[in-house]
Amino acid sequence: MKNLNKTTQKLITTIAVIAVLYAIMQTMQSTGNLSSLMSGLLVPVCAYSLVAVGLNLCVGYLGELSLGHAGFMCVGAFTSAFFSKAFQESIPDVPRFILALVIGTCAAALFGFLIAIPVLRLSGDYLAIVTLAFGEIIKNVINVLYIGKDSSGLHFSMKDMMSLGMEPGGKILVNGPQGITGTPRQSTFTIAVILLILALVVAHNFVNSRTGRAVKAIRDNQIAAETVGLPITKYKLIAFTISAAIAGVGGVIYAHNINSLTATTNNFGYNMSIMILVYVVLGGIGNFSGSVIAAVVLTMLPEMLRGLSNYRMLIYSIVLIVLMLFNWAPGILKFREEHGITSKGILDRFKKHKEVQ
Image (cartoon, rainbow, N blue to C red; front, top):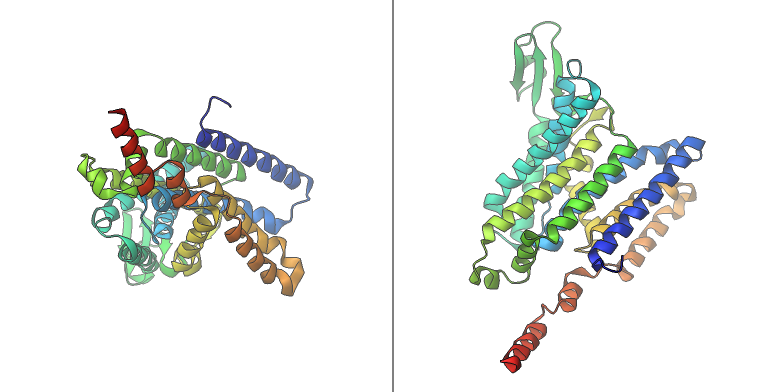
């Protein structure tokens, strides 16, 4: 451990903590000491944590504020659920879930890449507004989409179920606002934890790779990065696409944990985008471990305090304030100071360089 850098040590510690919490929760479930309501939140907590990790990669390391990651989560959820429902009878459970995971992740990454091409020309509030619009467009399109399947193949419509023109006995796969029902529930807590750990490892390796260091350089000073020859657009596209792919993984395990998948505001709309952003901000911008901790605490806490009735939301608000005051993450500003990337730090390095000469 002494030979490892601080970020690697932090990653190993985070994985160890997740493993310990996983063992505790599994033990409580097996002994019946965990309520059914809390048990039902285990997989969604991992899904929200995955989306928060993806958004933190975009906000904390790319330096771009996105409010559309609920849309990427929605794309991953519905593409994977559609595949699982369509091939439920023809492909065995395990291969079908693996294929659904790959398809959902790739679909979210593809949408992230396509959206990033025009969107990353913007910055600040304009970027946030456009990405928020993307999430709302995805949700609204799914709510008017009807897809059925019969012996002649797939049928699409954006009017109503009757306009599909299917043969008698045809199967409805996507039913407009009612979404997809009957998706196989294959997302277990174990699978969700494994995917969360893999996402943390991928994100950690990316930000510490050559590409990740280039992304951080672009975040700190885009003009200087462009001056030294870094392809700005290329690195931004890579970071945004990986960020969307991780959000898509969260959507896949979320979709395969419920019987009925609908594209509502609370699930994949504006409310969810803001909630994921809250996880990132409270957990610390640029801190993947903090995003996971914030997602777990803020998702589990209201249910743990449900017995306190009228005082539940009061305690919840106090916890939010405490998280803001005692934020354990360095954040971008402190990160810059520690690595000497402030204006004063750059000037000091320049002076030292001149003295050596």
